Each structure stands twice: as C-alpha cells, then as structure tokens.
Length: 162
Image (cartoon, rainbow, N blue to C red):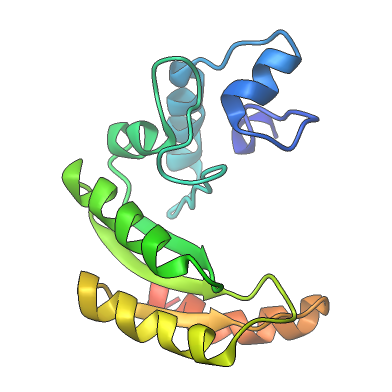
C-alpha cells in the first residue's frame, strides 16, 4: 500500500538527493497525509526515518521536522562503533532542542569487527551523558532469525504490553 511508503527511490542516499536524481520532489504534506490514513486504520503506527534526524527530506525540511509535525516519540538507533557517542549525543541534543520526546536508544552492530572496549563502553557513556534509557543492542549477524530473537526484548521495552 502506498501510504506505508509514500516515497521510494532507487538511489540509497539522503532523500533530497535520491529524489533529485529521479527528478522528483518530496512533499511533506504527502507524508503527513499518508500517516493520517494509517493512524485511522491501525492502533499503532511506527515510522522509520531515512538516514537520521537531521537528514534533509527536501530543500526546506529534515526528518526531525516531519517527526515534530507528526508529534512522534523518537527512538534513536545508532551503529555501535567508534563515533557512536558523538552521534548519539548530537542526535539527542537536536531532537530535544526541537521539543520532541526520546523513547530510548538501540545500539546496532553493523560490523563484525571493532574494539570491544569501545563497543562495550558506548551504551553506558551515552546513557550517562544523555539520561536516555538504553533499550538494548543488536548483535552483528546476517541471520534474520537471530536478529529477530535479539530484538524481541528490545521491542517489548519499546511497546510494553504488546
């Protein structure tokens, strides 16, 4: 259904660039209209942003602007690697600056390698500096079943009672 994904582009890039490459424009009102239709059909609607909080959607708006317009709670998903602390602190600050609520942070291992000292420290130091609840970490895996099982307790924290 088109309302689930009002825009889909071939190029894996920031939405503004992917749209430009296909000579299309992203209209925020199309996204908000799709969200409204989904809200009428379902008790719960989860929205995935593309690329991050401050990624441009078009020449005027970012992902976080759309989240604010839709009055969404935000879940930060961070790649657990070197640089994650800075990424999380800046993202949390930008989201809070715009008055949005952050429901938690999930760390995601996208790479097989990395310093265990860094990877183990990231969640704790991010939580200490932001005060945001760390909901869990997904391990590095190419096995969808394993990732689903690892995500299940995180999902329960995001959506208690479901």
